[in-house]
Structure formats: structure tokens, C-alpha cells
Amino acid sequence: MKKTMVIGIAGGSASGKTSISRQLKEIFEDSASVSIIRQDDYYKDQSDKTMEERIKTNYDHPFAFDNALLAQHIQALLHGEMIEKPTYDFVEHNRSALTETIYPCDVIVLEGLFILEDEALRELCDIKVFVDTDADVRLIRRLKRDVKKRGRTLDSVIEQYSTTVRVMHERFVEPSKRYADIIIPEGGHNLVAIDLLITKISSIIKKNMV
Ligand SMILES: Nc1ncnc2c1ncn2[C@@H]1O[C@H](COP(=O)(O)OP(=O)(O)O)[C@@H](O)[C@H]1O
Ligand SMILES: O=c1ccn([C@@H]2O[C@H](COP(=O)(O)O)[C@@H](O)[C@H]2O)c(=O)[nH]1
Image (cartoon, rainbow, N blue to C red; front, side):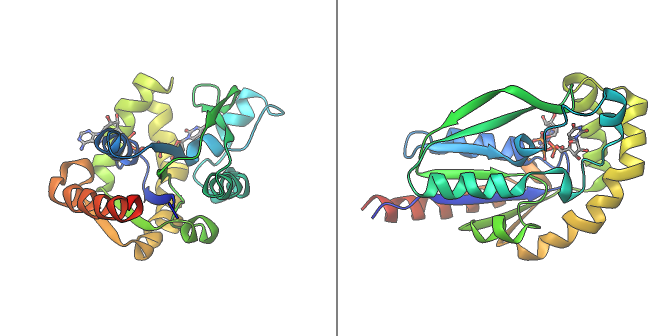
């Protein structure tokens, strides 16, 4: 019987998880149906909080996410059911009103900060990947991205990084590296590691198709 494969991609903020997930989706689009599920879309709803309160939330602690719903959605896809995936608005620091329908597929790329830290999510992954990018590179990337795409100021990114992002990374994200089957040093720059990952996924897809 055809089985859906789950590729878990964890790593620090701005390590390159989303960029690698997109590369994989593009590469396998012709041979398999691929869906990307981002843990970021499962940040808890904060409609009951003011903007001032939302700014103070610690978004780098596992409690900020509804991981139970995420695990339930992955299970549903594995059982051949479609899901209504929440979507997240980083500018508003809140869930959006819109959901996205995700249909059962051959490959689920499950990416996010705590995919390997959370035991239930980790156990759903057939291949566990950790994108390992140095902290200084991640901070520079985050500064550029958050100012351009997430409505932040330079000062707010630096303040959030020094108060929560860095400490939580060391406490929760970095230790989860030990669960990885594949560690990709230098993020998306490491073409050799990405090629190895692609070869492995291809062989699993081939076996699945016969
Ligand atoms: N290998 C790379 N080289 C240069 N910039 C990169 C690379 N990978 C990602 N980026 C950029 O860094 C930022 C963060 O990458 P992203 O994939 O969103 O990380 P994550 O999903 O881990 O937070 C984005 O603006 C992205 O374009
Ligand atoms: O409302 C929010 C939600 C999250 N964040 C920050 O985003 C990153 C996680 O996203 P990556 O794409 O992995 O960088 C996390 O470090 C949070 O600090 C936010 O600022 N506001």
C-alpha cells in the first residue's frame, strides 16, 4: 500500500527551514505530490490579547504552539483525510481568519522550530533533518527578513532576539539536534547535504510507487 512519507525539518529561526522545504517541493513536484506544513501556522490564536500583549508573548517557547492540533492534522493526512490548516499572520502576531485546505499527498514536509523537540511530532517523521546555521548568520538573516516581511523595526528584532529567541534556542532547539538523521550544516548553502537528502527521499518515493 502507498504510504505518505513525512520529512521533518527543524532548526533555529532563520536557519533556512522554509527555503529548504520550498526547494524540496520544487524538486519532487514532478514525481510526487508534496505539501509543506509549517509549524508557524499552528501558533496559538491570540485574538483575546491586545497588540501590546501580543508583542510581549514568548514565541520561542513550545507552549506558544498548538502542537496537539498539528499532530492531529498530520495523522489525518496519513489516514487519507484532508485538513483545514490554520494560517498565521506575523505582522498581526495572530492567526489569520483564512484556512488552507490540504489534501492527502505522497510527501509531507513538516517544518518548524520544535519538530524534533516535540516527541509526538518527532515520531511522525520518517526522515528527521536539522538545519544547522550559526547564530550570527541567523540573526543577520532574521534582521533583514523581519524588517522586510514581518513588519518589524531593527530595534524590535534585536530586543526580541536578546530577550527570548537566543535563550529559547539554546534551551529547546539546539538540544533537539541529537534526534536528527541528517544535519545540514550551513543551511541552504550545503548542496552536498541537500543532494544526499534528495537521493534518500527519491529512493523512498520509488519504493512507495511500486
Ligand atoms: N542559504 C541561504 N543563503 C542566504 N540567505 C538565505 C539562505 N537560506 C535562507 N536565506 C534567507 O534567510 C531568511 C530566513 O530563511 P528561512 O528559510 O525563512 O528560515 P527559517 O524558515 O528557518 O526561519 C530568508 O529571508 C531567506 O531568504
Ligand atoms: O507572532 C509571532 C510569531 C513568531 N515570531 C517569531 O518567529 C520565529 C519563528 O519563525 P521562523 O520562520 O522559524 O523564524 C520565532 O523565532 C518567533 O520569535 C514572532 O516574532 N511573532
